[in-house]
Image (cartoon, rainbow, N blue to C red; front, top):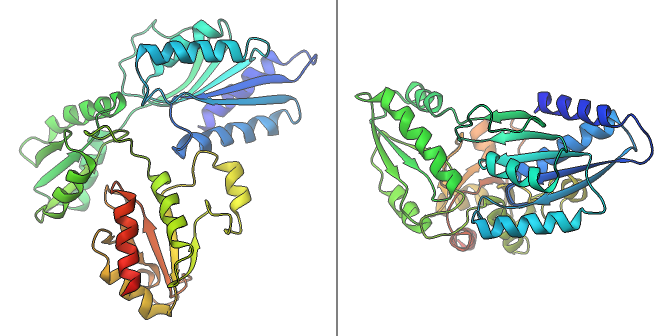
Amino acid sequence: MLCTLCCLTATVNARGADNERPKRVLMISTGSRFSPGFPIAEQSAIDALRQARPGQIEFYAEHLDIIRFSSDSYHRLFHDYLYEKYAEYPPDLLILFYVGNLLVAQKLLGQIFPGVPIVAAGLTEEEIPIGRLSKNLSGLAQRVDASGTIDLILRLQPETHRIVVIGGTAEVDRSVLSRVREATRAFTGRVEFDFWTDRPLAKIHEAIKTLPPQTAILFARMYRDAAGQAIISAQAAQLIAEALSGHPRVLEVLYPGLPSHPHHAVAARQMAGGFGGMLSLRVRGGHEAAVAVAARVEVWKRATSLGGVESLIEHRASVEGVGSPAPPDLLRLSVGIEDPQDLIADLEAALGG
C-alpha cells in the first residue's frame, strides 16, 4: 500500500502543475462499502494525498460491488451511471481498489475515462498476460499465498491429518479456490484435503461441529455461499451490537458502530463501509458472570484464534492472566459465518442463565 500511495501522490503532482482548479480524484472500489477493507484503503489514500497536497484535491468515491453483481448487464449500468455522473466533473486521477476483477474494472474505467491515469491496489488471482493492461495503469496486484498458509498450518499443528478448505461461489471465491487446489499438489502424501465449496452457510456450520481431531480449517474466501447468500461479517457484528446494547445483563457493548461508543464519530469517518467483525461485551456481575456466559454459549466457540470461519468468544482477562489490562467482566467476540440471528439468540440465552 505504501508503494501505491507513493505512485498516486507522484501522479497527482505530475498532473497538478497548473493551479486553475483543485484536482479531482475518483476512488473506485470493486467491492461493497460494507466490506471494511475497502473504506480503510480509501481513507489511507485520502490521508496520504491530503498530506502531499493540502487543500488542493477534491475526492469522490464509488463502490461498484461487481464481486456480487458480475453480469454484463450490470457492467453496462455501471458504465452509464459513471459516465453520466462525472460528465461535467471528469477526474484527473482514478484510484482502483479491487478484489479480483482487475481486467474487468480496468476495461470499464478505460471506456468511461479514456486517458485518465489509474493507480490500482488489491488482490487478484487472474492470469494477466503482458499487454492486456493499459499503459496508463500502475500499482500493485497481490495474490493469496496458499502454499505458505498450508505450510504454516502444518508447522504450527504438525499432527494435522486433514485440512478442510472452505470457499464460496462468487467468481473471486472460485479464483482463490483454484489457487488453493493448485498449491495442495505440493503437499500430496503429507496431509489429506477436503474441499467444501458447494454447501450453504448453515450446513457448513453444522458440519464444522462434527469435525474430528487433527483437522484444520483453511478458509479460502467466501463472498457468497452455495445458497447465494452474501457473507459480510461487519453487518452481522453491527446487528449483534445493536441487539445486545440494551440487554439488562449487559453493562456495556464496545463496538465503534454504535453511537454510544466514545470514538464513534472518528470510526464513522475512517470506516465508512462498516465497523469490522469484532466487538466486546461487559457483563453485569463481574468476572464470574462473564466467565459463566462464555461457558454457556453453544453456537459461539470459546477460543482464541488467528482466524477461522466460526464465531469466537473469549474471556480476555483469563487468557492474558495476572496483570491483564482487560476488565474482568469483558468478553471479546469475533464474528464468523454463522447466521447473525443464531448468534444473537445464543448470547441472549447464555446471558439469561
